[in-house]
Image (cartoon, rainbow, N blue to C red; front, side):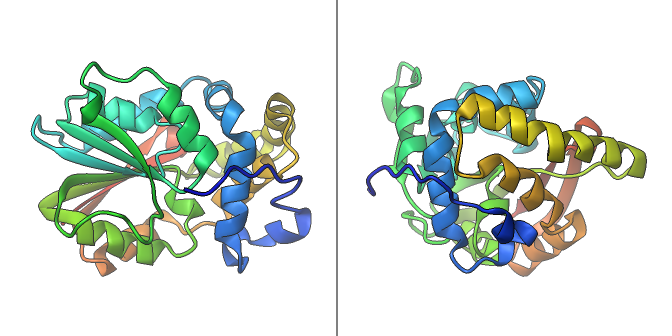
Length: 252
């Protein structure tokens, strides 16, 4: 596992014209999350108006979870979705993330009585430390947008899923209604970066990256095309909270 890093700046204004095309995106994303890990949860709560946990519970329901399921939660961060899956009845949950500081926060949170049922490990979404066809559900919340190559990650998710297993992606999106989209981007681009950076005492540029990475990321149609291209069947899409977030599901 890599040692923690706390950079002064992972993202500058020049990098953010299209952050998904920056050659060393993975390094910058890891540095960014290392910097904001201690305040990540409180910023999520405040700036989603406490909706982020409801979105995670919706992701658990969207997975059609069974009591025998093993869940691999990729880019698990501070563990909120991993814990939601365990609370939702999964038999076993394994959280994987490539940022040391985020995993450190996750491991400090209250675990279920059976600690073996919820574990965290270092790992990359594009090179998962998991055997072929070994899990029933793969989840990723607010993480596919941060991966250097989303299609490569989707293929890796398909590799580790058992036949009939489900992929659930929770990601930020933009409202389809142009008026709502304009109002949301006013908040997203101009208010959130200032208040979130102040709460986090952040100098990494994380909260400038967030709105720009959402606005320049692939749309819902393209995401379902990538899922199909990676071998997933029956792709479905479910917008949440006026389209601010979106759920995707595919079957292996």
